[in-house]
Image (cartoon, one colour):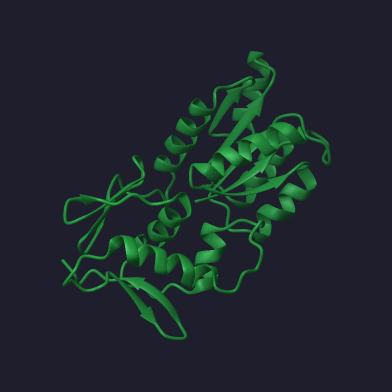
Length: 227
């Protein structure tokens, strides 16, 4: 999943972005409302986390929330506010926010609220994904094959997660980069084949076919035929 984080406090933004990346999310970071709106319009964001007080737009984060909601009625929006006043919270919710969190907050609560919003989103994953011999649990970030739990890195999990959301469909490298990497991606041309190789190594069962199929010149798929 890809998250747009809009926070003008550079230290807080860097800290939250790192924690989200460690949890397996691709994160785009903006420090002002105007830049964030542009990023939202061109990047495939699955969720937005934004501060109430933002430069770059009259009305700050509340107005940004309203504009995002106008073009994306289903994208989950979580607002961060240092003001716990009821009027401010009502203003955020009326602007289209799905949830809010008052600063200072505990990172585990932030992650839990993000997971809850993604579960309720129209494009949310089912509680468990099963494709062929693979089972993936987004909530527990767990993967099993034939009952064997397979530990994956956050990026490996993100790549497999996206492939399993589209069983048997051919997914291009560009699509995987768009959804599993953020703008910190350095352009390394072999990054997708490298992570596919890591996944194959971890998912392999001696004597059984590889659940990830390479479609030469086109992309990759997770096949449902290997039950």
